[in-house]
Image (cartoon, rainbow, N blue to C red; front, top):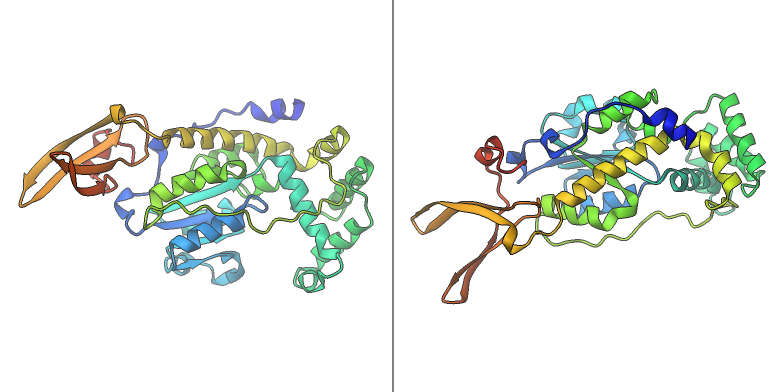
Length: 332
């Protein structure tokens, strides 16, 4: 609580739909970049979007020096373990930017356990595929008992001694590579969609409403889950205190990310028939042209054309109308 209060008193811009940066006029062919923060359900998010868009690339960081604005422009969906500091300059105005976060204690335990697993029997191929530094860390961790808070403290001190800071406030790193908390929060407000992994079903429904080509919700299972925890006990007070140096800034970032996501989810709550506004602009040449929206929700309105109680046609109010945004009738 003291760490939260120390870092939490930061004045920053508040996120709202008025800050959406991408142009909804491109919604029929959106370009989406997902900033893949480790161990925050990113594999499941990639699975969802690659099922929506065939022209996709994940793990864009593997391109190294070849990664550029021109390279990314080839894809409708791209993702990678890349920080906002590194990749944002390559994304044009119309890219939709998404980032995910996870409750910090759960995230750091999962992240550390994932590296520790490299040293397990049967993981030799995965062990050899990682850089030498990760191999050495995994072997060091194999000698430790993570049910013992003293071993967690020793791990933190050893990582600091070898100048390996990646495990410290990893979620903050993906907003600012220097882990400046004020800068990180400022960058957080520049994302179009922020998701917390504990609310994945809600997030996928929102993404489906915005981007899925067939508007059919895909229930995506969690993937790439490591069940081995090597003694980590998230409920143990001593364990939590020993892990605090790893996540003191992430706690603040996650708290704000959760607030943003809850704001987002509220905007997409199901509207009622009594909560609809709209109008018919023109009826000519057999076409009815107009607009429709829920007053208190960004969920899209399903429309029916009826005559004498018989449904003649169905549609959805899902096309971008620049005039409606300009007049303040609808934020996107």
